[in-house]
Image (cartoon, each protein chain N blue to C red):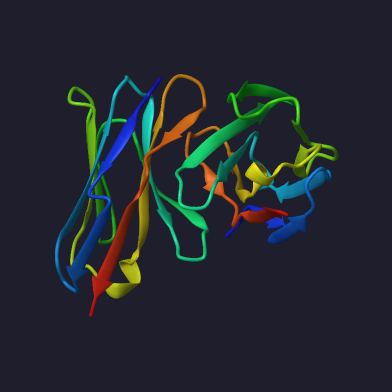
Length: 112
Length: 108
């Protein structure tokens, strides 16, 4: 069964460094999402992406964040200058025309 | 802004018991999602519904649009059902607003 994959599973970085989280959505899906979950808190929407542009973003998704679909298969989330409060689990999701979203296993980001 | 509330926050059941988890939301939605989060953190979509009722195996999800309320039922619960169950409301557009989750532990 096709699945969404994410790499790396765990990323440790120092405050101020740039990180890129990678996702490979299901191949025929058209809509892509990033969510985050700070430890012990609820999952939060970050951004949705369709037709090579951001369709919606939350107030969390400020200028430090960017998304890209560089090659038609990968979908990346970049954090330009990480802060301690960016430490969280980041989930990628994708969907086809139906609204059902398929989630990746997540990348745990630890900022020290 | 859509507020999504779940109850209970924690639930412990004996194997075989019938379980109900409730979700209420504050504004109109296009769809309601039920998700399962495993202890390792991974999220699996269980149901997406916009009206009525859906069943998959021992899981049943219902939604009452007028009352802005959805329930997830698990029949004949099993220890492998132990997980966090999350409801998420989809308003206009694609954004999901998540509840805080219900942590379920099923004891043998």
